[in-house]
Length: 80
Image (cartoon, rainbow, N blue to C red; front, top):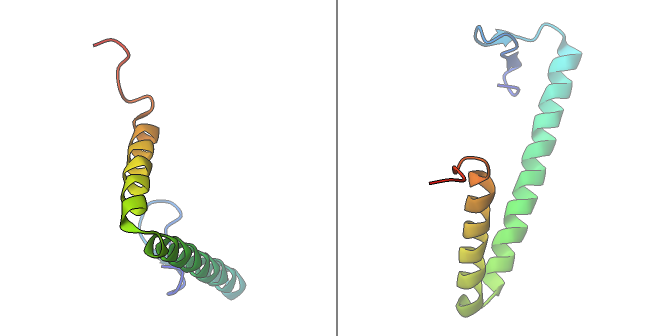
Protein backbone atom coordinates (compact mmCIF):
# COMPACT_ATOMS: atom_id res chain seq x y z
CA UNK A 1 0.00 0.00 0.00
CA UNK A 2 2.73 2.45 0.94
CA UNK A 3 4.68 1.57 -2.20
CA UNK A 4 1.70 2.68 -4.30
CA UNK A 5 1.15 5.83 -2.23
CA UNK A 6 -2.11 4.54 -0.73
CA UNK A 7 -3.40 4.22 2.81
CA UNK A 8 -6.55 3.28 4.71
CA UNK A 9 -7.06 5.83 7.46
CA UNK A 10 -10.76 5.57 8.22
CA UNK A 11 -11.54 1.99 7.24
CA UNK A 12 -13.41 3.10 4.12
CA UNK A 13 -10.86 1.66 1.73
CA UNK A 14 -7.59 2.71 0.16
CA UNK A 15 -7.16 6.35 -0.81
CA UNK A 16 -4.28 8.15 -2.47
CA UNK A 17 -1.96 10.14 -0.22
CA UNK A 18 -2.21 13.73 -1.43
CA UNK A 19 1.01 14.99 0.17
CA UNK A 20 4.01 13.65 -1.80
CA UNK A 21 6.33 14.30 1.16
CA UNK A 22 4.18 12.17 3.44
CA UNK A 23 3.90 9.45 0.78
CA UNK A 24 7.69 9.41 0.40
CA UNK A 25 8.24 9.29 4.16
CA UNK A 26 5.79 6.42 4.49
CA UNK A 27 7.45 4.53 1.65
CA UNK A 28 10.91 5.09 3.20
CA UNK A 29 9.64 3.79 6.55
CA UNK A 30 8.17 0.67 4.94
CA UNK A 31 11.35 0.03 2.94
CA UNK A 32 13.49 0.41 6.07
CA UNK A 33 11.22 -2.01 7.95
CA UNK A 34 11.47 -4.55 5.11
CA UNK A 35 15.28 -4.39 5.08
CA UNK A 36 15.46 -4.79 8.88
CA UNK A 37 13.08 -7.75 8.74
CA UNK A 38 15.17 -9.38 5.98
CA UNK A 39 18.37 -8.96 8.01
CA UNK A 40 16.79 -10.45 11.16
CA UNK A 41 15.29 -13.39 9.27
CA UNK A 42 18.58 -14.08 7.50
CA UNK A 43 20.51 -13.96 10.78
CA UNK A 44 18.09 -16.34 12.50
CA UNK A 45 18.12 -18.73 9.55
CA UNK A 46 21.91 -18.71 9.43
CA UNK A 47 22.13 -19.35 13.19
CA UNK A 48 19.87 -22.39 12.94
CA UNK A 49 21.63 -23.62 9.79
CA UNK A 50 24.98 -23.59 11.59
CA UNK A 51 23.72 -25.53 14.62
CA UNK A 52 23.75 -29.32 14.49
CA UNK A 53 20.34 -31.00 14.14
CA UNK A 54 20.58 -32.54 17.62
CA UNK A 55 20.75 -29.05 19.10
CA UNK A 56 18.51 -27.11 16.69
CA UNK A 57 15.42 -29.35 17.04
CA UNK A 58 15.09 -29.05 20.86
CA UNK A 59 15.68 -25.29 20.70
CA UNK A 60 13.01 -24.94 18.00
CA UNK A 61 10.50 -27.04 19.93
CA UNK A 62 11.15 -25.17 23.16
CA UNK A 63 10.78 -21.85 21.34
CA UNK A 64 7.50 -22.98 19.77
CA UNK A 65 6.10 -24.00 23.18
CA UNK A 66 7.17 -20.69 24.73
CA UNK A 67 5.58 -18.70 21.91
CA UNK A 68 2.34 -20.73 22.20
CA UNK A 69 2.21 -20.15 25.96
CA UNK A 70 2.89 -16.44 25.48
CA UNK A 71 0.00 -16.05 23.04
CA UNK A 72 -2.29 -18.24 25.16
CA UNK A 73 -1.86 -15.97 28.19
CA UNK A 74 -5.24 -14.77 29.39
CA UNK A 75 -7.14 -16.99 26.97
CA UNK A 76 -7.18 -20.18 29.06
CA UNK A 77 -9.73 -20.21 31.91
CA UNK A 78 -8.19 -20.65 35.36
CA UNK A 79 -10.87 -23.09 36.59
CA UNK A 80 -11.87 -26.03 34.46
